Length: 164
Image 1 (cartoon, rainbow, N blue to C red):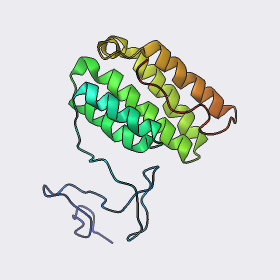
Image 2 (image 1 turned 90 degrees about the vertical axis):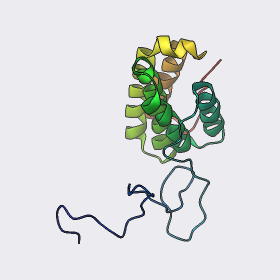
Image 3 (image 1 turned 30 degrees about the vertical axis):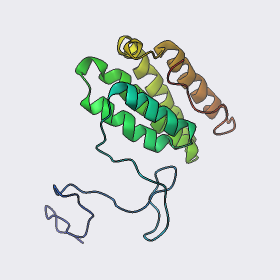
């Protein structure tokens, strides 16, 4: 056990000393036992240009990797200008909601899908800059949450279309 206030030395760390978990992960982002094969990971600190972030997040969502899409969207959220943060945060929350759904956590999925839908709607002006119809996407999030809450088939209906 590590003493209070002491720094653990047995953790994976990046070159700057930040804690990182280098264990392989499954498609839902859950750590796998050391030595098992996992899926390719997205760098936690990746920051893409907005159009590239949307395209990569859509590719990951379409491929069944909402946890990884969340990493892309979170990078845009944290690096973006203040007036765009609700939009990007909402998209990241929708991806986390899908991650919870993928993992079978209905309660977490419903909560994050609803929160993400509401937050995307708050960021409608920023969404419009990138060709995203925020009211349509917010409606998708609420409908998906309702379906999950109503014991609908998990994963039914496929991923959201961020644009179009």
